[in-house]
Amino acid sequence: MKREPHADALGELHAASQAQPNIALIKYWGKRDAALNLPVVGSISITLESLWTRTEVRFVPGQKQDRVSLNGRSDEAESKRVTACLDLLRQRAAVDYGADVASRNNFPTAAGLASSASGFAALVHAGTQALGLDLSEAEQSVLARRCSGSAARSIFGGYVEWAHGQRVDGTDSVARPLLAADAWPLRVAVAITSTAAKQVGSSEGMRRTAQTSPFQSAWIDTQEADLATARRAILARDFEALALISEHSCLKMHALAMAAQPGLLYWNGATIECMHRVRALRQQGLPVFFTVDAGPQLKAVCEPSAIERVKAALKDVPGVLDVLDTGLGAGARSISASTLEA
Ligand code: DP6
Image 1 (tube, protein in one colour):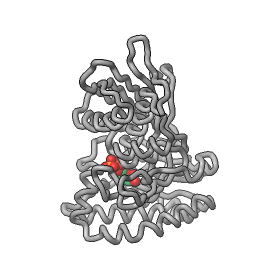
Image 2 (tube, rainbow, N blue to C red; image 1 turned 60 degrees about the vertical axis):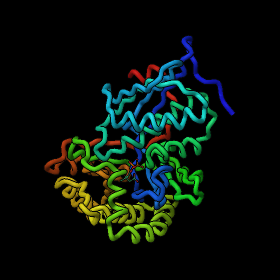
Image 3 (tube, rainbow, N blue to C red; image 1 turned 120 degrees about the vertical axis):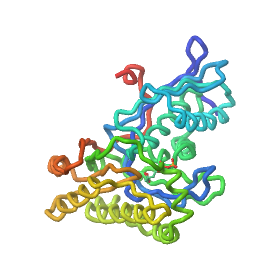
């Protein structure tokens, strides 16, 4: 079934959407099918609030190619991924127009801050609206997954689980909300320790890990138990239990990747110093834990009462350039032209 596409006077189909990055507490690392982007493990994340991607998509009748601008610049590698993602939407809608895509992040891109998660969730949401496709959030999550795995989770807000799934076509490897953001409003301090783009992207890092890391099977074998522990902790709002399992999943993922050949080392000195600082705070009784993705930024997740002390402690670590602070937020949604320009 199709909804009315958002056509303007020129017959162009357009829409604008916002999505926020998510941070995995139980990590996704590894693909069992690279074409469909099916993961070797399920994962659990939290969607952030004040970091965002805002994306406008305009399908133009007669236009042959896509024109993509990210933060005001064109980027060839990213443009290819955007076109591949738009192709999935165009197939669904039986439309062959090229699109103009303008996307903006209010945080550093491609440095382990999940810009692909918010980017592709916003793109799939806006593209779906522009083409008038009548897709459920679950269906949008499946499409976002095919564009970038973690984007499947940013379709939803709060605490989210992306399932491994069983079907070969991947239609059940989809994210679903576990708990709303305001049901347990944790906060996140993000310590920025570098703004350089990472040297080895997630897809390449996962491929190398699967091919060469001796720990790959242990990673897969132990994930179900971690997911069950995290799910229980979230539903019980048990901070201590979530802290322990999240740090475990983070360190396990990095150990797995470090054992690849050549080893993947996403941290810098400040990242490690921040980990020690977070653990010292927890030993002093502060409800806080860390997690780190495929980049050098450290995310400290805490109870709201701890956020000021956590931020101050991270700012004090040599090599920390900045500390961002956010709550947990909503899933992908439409935005108005004035929000887009703000
Ligand atoms: C370390 O979703 O960026 O952040 O599916 O290849 O686009 P692709 O990978 P991506 O990988 C994210 C990896 C991670 C862990 C996580 O978010 O679960």
